[in-house]
Each structure stands twice: as C-alpha cells, then as structure tokens.
Image (cartoon, rainbow, N blue to C red; front, side, top):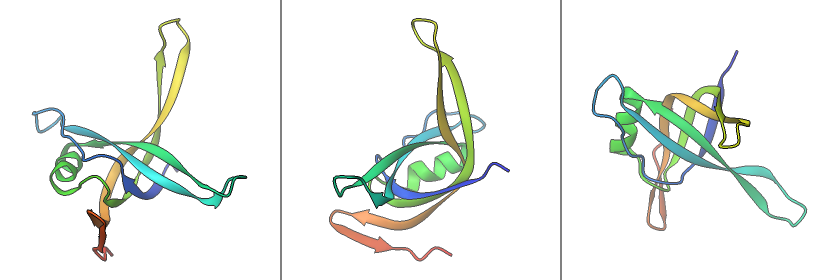
Length: 116
C-alpha cells in the first residue's frame, strides 16, 4: 500500500497550470517541521513537493494561500530523468488525492478551521 499523509505549511500560493479541465495541475511545496531537534537544538524542516491534478488543483489555487497549514493525503511517486551529463537522477513527490485546510494564515494570525 502506498499512502502518505502530510501536514505542514504552504510555502507559496498555488498557481493553476493548464486551461483544459482534464489537464489542470498545480505543484505545491509543504514545509513540515521535524519532530526532533538536531545536534544544535534546532528543529529542521523538510520541504515536500506535492502534485495536484484537475479539481484538487483548481480548488487549491482558489482557496489556499501562502502560510496556510494543509493536510495532504496522497501517494508517493518517484520520477526519473537524465541530467545534462547523462546521469540518471531521481526525485520523489506526493501525488495528492485529497487536500484539506487545517488552519488559515492571515498576517501574524492563525485561524483554525476545525476540519473533521
């Protein structure tokens, strides 16, 4: 089973790409703070790329803004490409199947939405 749940802060307002309703997409990055401190006593953050398609992408571009805390349900997908010097490179991204707003960021204020 390939299922992942990520909760974190949206690093930029989503932008919808594509005008065809069957091929709309948006790429978002979610900042997820780790649950432990590093050797310097600092919580490090992972920046996780998520790919949204069609209706999910459209709603995200209309509803979510930079700083919002989102919950993303989806699956991991590994992409392969060749670099300029013919090396195979890999990157992992989350293909979003559901995106929910956990709390909205407005300036210095966080407003909880109480999603169930």
